[in-house]
Every structure is written in structure tokens, then in C-alpha cells.
Length: 237
Image 1 (tube, rainbow, N blue to C red):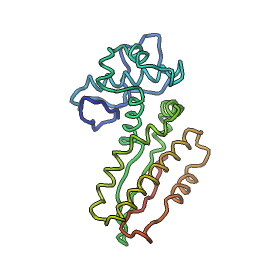
Image 2 (image 1 turned 90 degrees about the horizontal axis):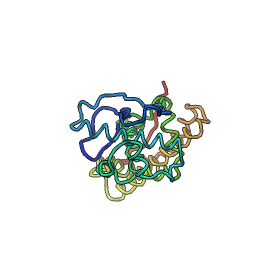
Image 3 (image 1 turned 180 degrees about the vertical axis):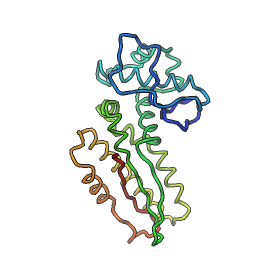
Image 4 (image 1 turned 45 degrees about the horizontal axis):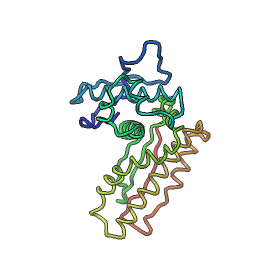
């Protein structure tokens, strides 16, 4: 899913619509494909334009380092006007951030609250490793960007707030702080570990990674009985 400023978040997954503005001699070296229609989006052209911009950025990353790419390069490659770019993105970093935000929200990561028989609540994070592997070319290319961890970590701030707000009113002040810190420390750390594992060609078997991630999610029920624990699941097939 790709986010644009002009329009509501679509319910479908839209990766990239291959832009008619691209030169016929240029072949997209990544594995981007249209995997869903924008028919349900209130502004299909806006979504298509955002896809052209993202595709142009990927093409440029085959030609030069990310920090050498300018907005002028992107708009020339995408075949759009400068004001069209700034209508949807403030800079090239936002293109990358919204790509990661979109795929995390729609494909890579799902979150659910589970109440066990003992009435202890757990937050279950499920990573879709299969999706990551199927789109390895795009994701690995973007993970080479210096400081990318900071970019997509910042993009999760609103998501953290939403997760926190669902439980906040059921906790006292101290437990609220414990839960807030837990979300930031554990969930952000887990995401960074998974992305680093993926970027380095998945050096550990998936089952081993899963055991380590769950080992890192410390049980805080002894100190804060009402603060949910975090558990990890991985989809690999």
C-alpha cells in the first residue's frame, strides 16, 4: 500500500503501476508490479502518480547513490511536474517512509490483542517473511539507504500512539508509562532486528530468529500485571 497526501488510505495493496512516462528503453530492474487495482481509491490518478514517483526513485537507485539523488532527478525520471511531486511528498525521504509505512500496515506486519485463559492480555506481532522474500529486490535496495532505520522508526510513531491509546485508560499512571516504554523499546527493537536479519541475507533460520525475538520480549507481568506482554509470530509459507 502506498500513501499519498491527496486521498484516504486505500483498503487494497498498491505497489507500483508502471508509468507510461518511462522510456521504452528502460526496464525496471526491481520486481515491482501492479498487484491490485486502485478502483476503490477516491483519486486513482493521485495513487498512480505516487507509484510513478516511487518507481522513478527505484530506477535512479540503480544509477547513483541515494544521497546523490535529487527531487529534480525524480521528477525528470517520472515525467511529472515539480508541483506534482510536492503536492504529494515533501522530499525523497517521505517517498521511502510512506512505502515502508504502507507495506508494514498492509502486508509485512499485523497486530492483534489476545486474551489467554488466565485473562492475561498479549500483543501478537506477526511478520510476513514470505512477503519480504517475494519483494526482496525492492526492500533490500531501500535498506541500503544510510539512516533508513531512523526513517522508518520515525514513521511508526503514530502507530505506537494508536496502540498505546487502546490500553491507556485501563492503566494507572505508572503502568501507562511502563506500557509506553515497552511499546517503544520492544516493538521498535524487534522491527529493526527483523529488517537487519533480512538485509544481511537471513543468516539465521526463521525458527531460530523467532525464538530469539520471543526471548528478547521480557515478561513484565510480575511488575505490571495489567500491561500486555508482546509475542512474535512469523509467516514463512
